[in-house]
Image 1: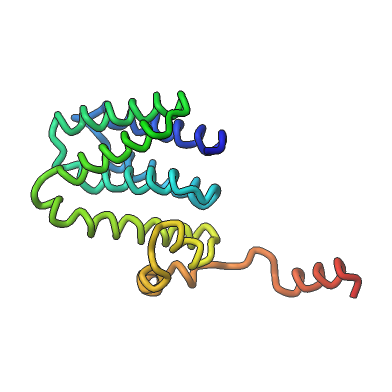
Image 2: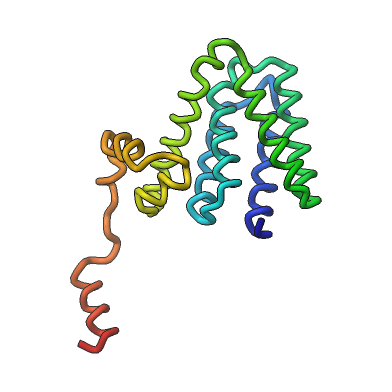
Amino acid sequence: MKDVIKKSILHNINKAILILERKKQMDVEAMKKLSDQAIEDVALYKDLDVVSMSVLFYSIYKVVDCLDEESFDYLINGMDAARVALQKNNFGMYNKSIKNMFTTVRGCNAKVKEHFQDVMDAARIKKGAVLLQKGLSLGQAAGLMGLSNWDLQEYAGRTIILGAHTEKIQARTRLETALRIFGV
């Protein structure tokens, strides 16, 4: 794992721990914002570890209402264990901690167990759509999020994401610049 990616993940884990430690007055939107910030790192680094963290944060945001005190403590301990393992470059322990946190979120309650895969798919699709907004191609965004192009295209087609892009530099100016570069 590259140092810049490790540093970014550690930064996000520290933020997640602070959010989770506020249990009672937890601002659930703070976890969603953290997930949105993490997706910017996905667009920048295109790394699967960053993807899994972003999906984990979004999943916690989606199930936070059903988490009990024990689950909060387990998630905090899991985040702390992931942080320590990552600082020591113990990637096996880091991955185990992430997997255990996903298991905790999945095991929140019977209703969430039934719909967890839907939540995970929705998280991947939503985050894939955000990657489209960041300028990645449909294929890149779908590949990073573990989706088929069709799944992401179906969602993006129902939103304004694909049509929301506006050019900052006029076409004529871009053309003149290209012609000047190539000496035409």
